[in-house]
Length: 60
Image (cartoon, rainbow, N blue to C red; front, side, top):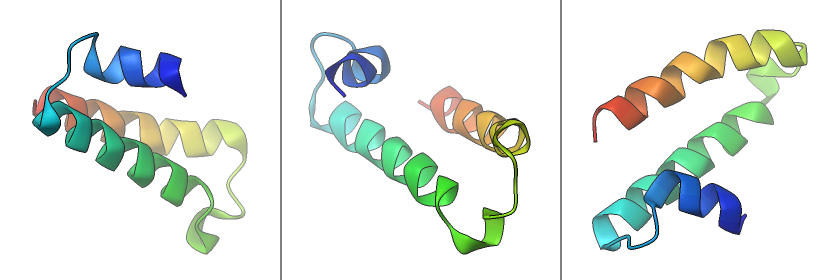
């Protein structure tokens, strides 16, 4: 988890960055186990979630 945190926040993250990274992680992990996407294969789920995550990161 620390590697992902560093990738999302950098080495010196403030409270805003930490909150944004926590939200992104929660969104992706929650969506990955949600019953609405339970029948998606890994590739299909990644195809759907990657653009969402990219939009989220681009807004920073």
